[in-house]
Image 1 (cartoon, rainbow, N blue to C red):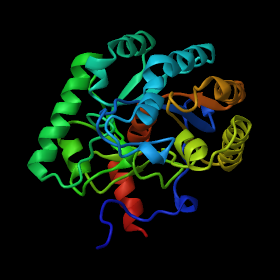
Image 2: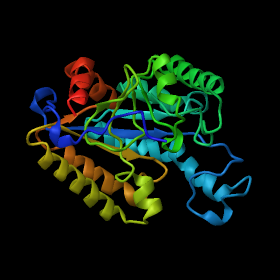
Image 3: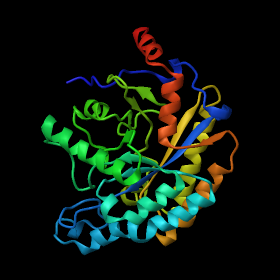
Image 4: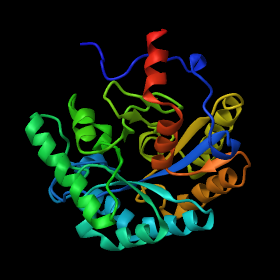
Length: 297
């Protein structure tokens, strides 16, 4: 079947995108804060035990994130004046409440990221998915005091119904599609796609490709430099997508901190959140203008 969720739009044919303060690049940290079920396989560092229940090797590796890694990351974000855009499993709210408290103190943006990272919506009926998403969104709102505006699916998964159901629940953007350097409108009224990255992502770079911390630092800097060059006439978005059980291991953390220092120290950068990026785009690119642009193609 053909994709009906969004239209093809070459970035060279769009009206210029301007960020606040004449910034060229809008930069946000996509911080994955997740819970994993102890008897279900998931992201693994050693495939040989991934199918076991329990699996201390891989579950323990993932559990390093909320226990240790995120606190190391928080220190770095604070030092560079960065607020996280948190991709939040709703089960985190009851299981790791100290993380919620830390984020509320810092004004983090809270996005819905499923119930846990062991559950996907694939195979759910529309009614089942609506009930599931309603519980996820309501749980996050109750714990954080803020109703999520954005969504990232566990493992970037959706059903064909997900964007419409999220719109019905009051959300206004998704991150799942990873196909652009600017926000754009979906063919669901009130819904945007905001850039996220599957490549500049510690899972892909460290687990998928086994790169070093120094490699990671250079890739982040190279990504930023190219987007900065591209943005001479129209703004770009850079998402840096992190999992504290991976990038905040002691031997990797300093390379992340060095990359953040490079970006935060540059002029012409809007250090922001995915919520603020979506809100700015929605305000400055009305739906009528987008419809006219699509009709001209």
